[in-house]
Length: 63
Image 1 (cartoon, rainbow, N blue to C red):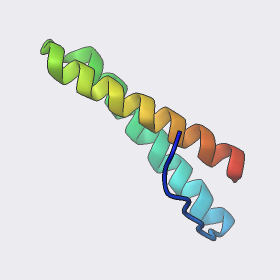
Image 2: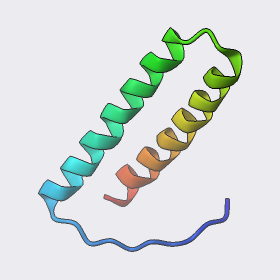
Image 3: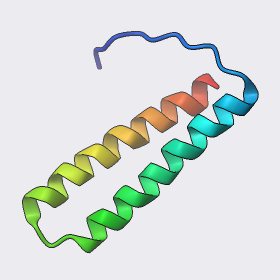
Image 4: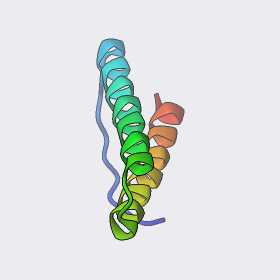
């Protein structure tokens, strides 16, 4: 995986908020995936959900 390294200093409260936002968005994406019948849109949402899962995983390891 390649990408830009971003360094961000967060307080514990800010870390909790970012984690909460990422988790909530992930839940919403999963609901959208299950509620759509359009194949292409479902694929786009799944890709976003996978990226969000990866981001959340890396965020939790770094936090």
